[in-house]
Length: 437
Image (tube, rainbow, N blue to C red; front, side, top):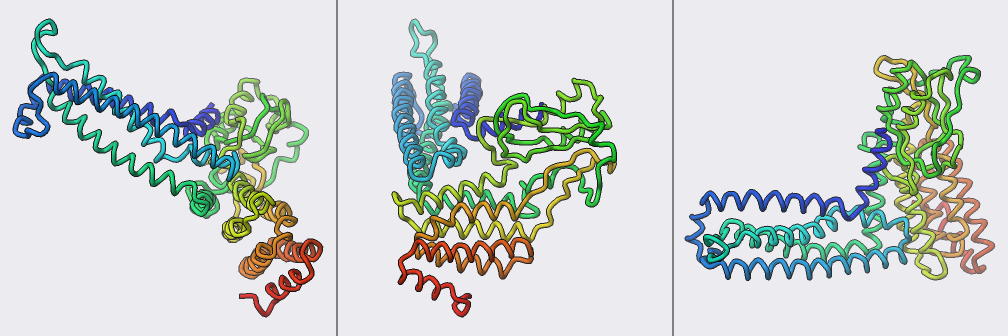
């Protein structure tokens, strides 16, 4: 169940409605508080401030109506600008990067500020009474003053929004934001260490029971979709309650077909309720998440690089910037001590076996996917070949260094086939050992 909740939280983070809804609820609560204070007569001291103190109900109504109408007009403009930016980002950077724009907390807060200000002014407006049939005259001076202050803050938010929107679609900022998220995953002590580093205690050198294959039970996916998150605490707790061992067959980010084999549970005679509890710790969705799927962030940089190297864009500088970030993250990962696949609970008992992180396989997939496009550009090929040499020289991961060496050789061979003869000779000169930093 907690795994499914984690999936829901992942979707909420990428939504435009959640933060504005919270801010609107806060506006409703604030209006109730300020009106109550006005009814108690605690705002009489505001009379000394003539520029905000309104003696007549008509003036208060006019001011609140003006603010409310203006907020809705500006909110419409803000929504329109946001949609335009999302459209441009989808066309230029790819649809998979839209989630990063929608997760942007600044955009969500600005949208919420306009909507909540509008709601607050409406709620205060209905409390203003002009006497006569409306009863005793009442002007909520404190509430009106708060409305003015909120409006000023909202105008400041509008200025921030315009600046933030313009800077958020600059390619260097897009790459930097993805790289920052990736860095949080790959750093050994980061808050989102590579799965399954935070799944219970590490048990290096452990082994499954001798009769695991015979007595284990196969568990199949209840639905099709991407494995977004694994609730490690819930998985450990469930296996501990039933004195069981669960072996995961997939890492977060993998696509699961309906009825696919996803878990092995030992012993296999656990009740169906326990099996449901185990699968409830796995969250499936229609898209890949980012909280545990490190490869999804690599793929975002990969997509940016491929789009930049396409004939339609022909932007090798952007592609090399993406490769700089990819190689930096690979180097950081090569310095990490990856967690053992065998995970234990607090008592030290083996409870979960998770698929290991394949650094070499990831690096091979990234570079092989880019090889053909890189080899067609002298600028990109020379930069990445030198980048590979630096990565190969700095990493102490022997298998990764060997892979990088092979990929560099294959990149140069591909350049001989795709580049003109003069460009290929220039490529060899630029990537010669004497010129390597």
